[in-house]
Image 1 (cartoon, rainbow, N blue to C red):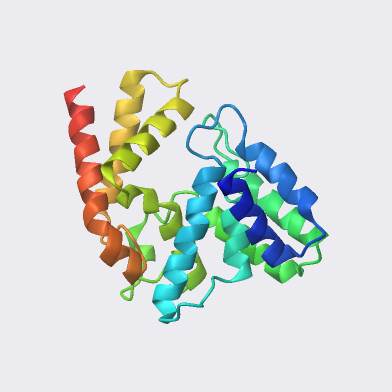
Image 2 (cartoon, rainbow, N blue to C red):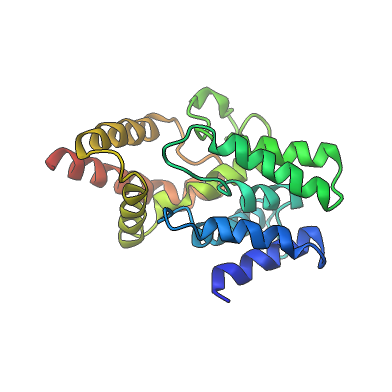
Length: 224
């Protein structure tokens, strides 16, 4: 079993118990689909790790853990992924809610997870949605998930390049001109946000490097 699989299964068993592994078997099969190059189990593993880091930092407690709901959302948020489709998050949210209902979670908790998954569609592109305290509409779990999902933007340059190459491979159906145009728009929107990362921890630890990575990628796109 790979390290990502081990950590994902451990997270699932922590929130769902020891007798529902079949649901995560299905999710892991999805994350191993051949058309995925970045949105894989490895990405989910790092999202889970960043959630832990943010939770501990925000509470000032080395033993603090993220809520079961945000962990579930992290596990499922890319469960369905097709770069040609525009309903990946909605279908992933439905799958999460269905699976969690089957393992005995309440309708309210399933709905919370589905809403968290849906929040990753666009990552609050409207910067006004982030309030003056850096909270995503007052929802700490949503802020944590969005920041953990975008943490790769603040990675070391080599890891960032691997991420860019992985996403480009997933968009292999798009020609180079379309890729440059679309990617440029996405990156510029990130730079125009008042805060790229919502939580104080991620802002302080990763924002500077994220901006440098994005600027470097934009320069490379202009040079092509």
